Length: 270
Image (cartoon, rainbow, N blue to C red; front, side, top):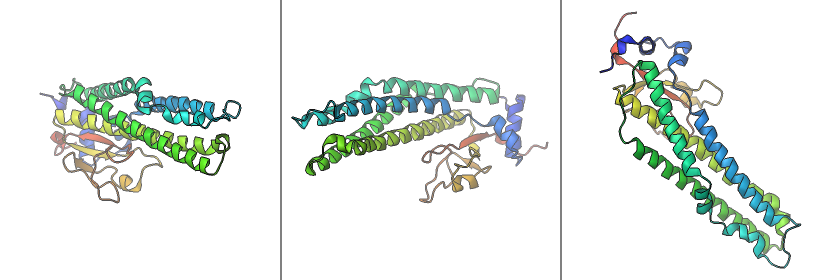
């Protein structure tokens, strides 16, 4: 049984619950954003697409282009994207990200409670699901990129253009694929972090939270309006124009955080 009253930080959470929404208090108890984990994922994206760009450049370089056959430039489309992703170490990267977020959130709750939080079951299964879903998303983005490249090359061939003449178009299509992969990296890391936070909070009996934004110019208006409001995980607020209801971090690329609310102190005097 966690004795909440023994911890000063939980007292700060209680102040938030009683309407004392001081930004200084918020920053003392606000969970850390998964910046390190996002950076790790994005580094993988940049590395893989840099490799891909080098392969493409080798095929469209005028000095290396074989004028006798059209097969050389198209060889880049024959590279198995699934194999490339599997051999690039994404599975290990995602495993590190997931475990890092598990550890980070466990330490956060231990810090605000002054006691180790109870173990949360099925961690291995959740990490495996995170890895699987992200690998599928990245591979799908890669397949779409290759399809775009194929369309670009086919259109060039129909016009009788040399591949080096459309090099910029080819690089642009690769850029679209890279930007999509970066969005996946950001969005999925934030979503998984939010899921871990919710699971850990509910494991110790904290089912309500105070909504906290990132307090910068990138916060969308609907989320900014939620700043300082209290909600439960079972009944999240509306977070977009489509009427979807989400907890912090669940909406697309949402960097908001859920500050645990300790109802034990809600009716106590200062």
